[in-house]
Length: 111
Image 1 (cartoon, rainbow, N blue to C red):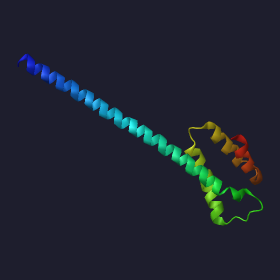
Image 2 (image 1 turned 180 degrees about the horizontal axis):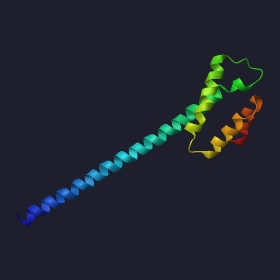
Image 3 (image 1 turned 60 degrees about the vertical axis):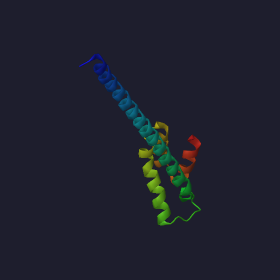
């Protein structure tokens, strides 16, 4: 092998390695960004569900079984969806043990 061929082979290996690392870095960055966006979307959707069904907590509101079910499902999703926020977990745990009338105020007083 001539020195020119060795230089060509080494340069090709270096270029392939750099290209592969750049492609992997781009993929990981996109993956992390997608994960963060999806996590935020889950949180927003859950808050929207809670806000839409918060009237179940009002003693003057005659809640249907569907309303109560939707509210309970949203409340049950809080520990999973907000697992990275200990304050929300603590607030939801404290509010779940509170009386029905004070649950609403418990959430909004803390945030």
